[in-house]
Amino acid sequence: MFFDFNITGFDDIEEMIKLGKVAENLGFDCIWISEIKHDPFLRLMLIAEHTKNIKIGTSIALAFTRSPMTLAYTSWDLQSFSRGRLILGLGSQIKAHIERRFSIEWKPPAPRMREYILALRLFGTAGNTINL
Image (cartoon, rainbow, N blue to C red; front, side, top):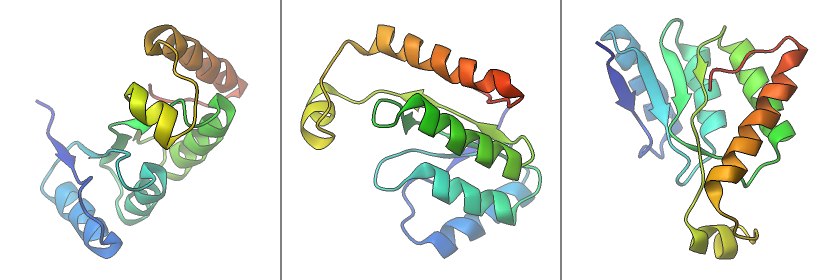
């Protein structure tokens, strides 16, 4: 059985770090953070710094607002810092947000996501591993 803990809604970083420690001490398997109001990678880095074993993951990180190479660099750094505990969850966004919030041209997400993940995996062949 896999026990997850999602701490997306916490704005207070100190409180979020405390919750990460509590989740690990209680035996949760993974802490998840979604990209809603904050960059999930910065928060996961802090949780990784203050925990030892619990996996950390994005549920989800927006793919199309970042270049695949930028996301690969960020993921590799976090994967290395956390000693292999990162699980990278990617997602799109609704058409209105893609166009108005992020000023990106809307395209059907499934074929684009496939291409994006292939690019991430290609970048990962340089000796880095990303859990997708």
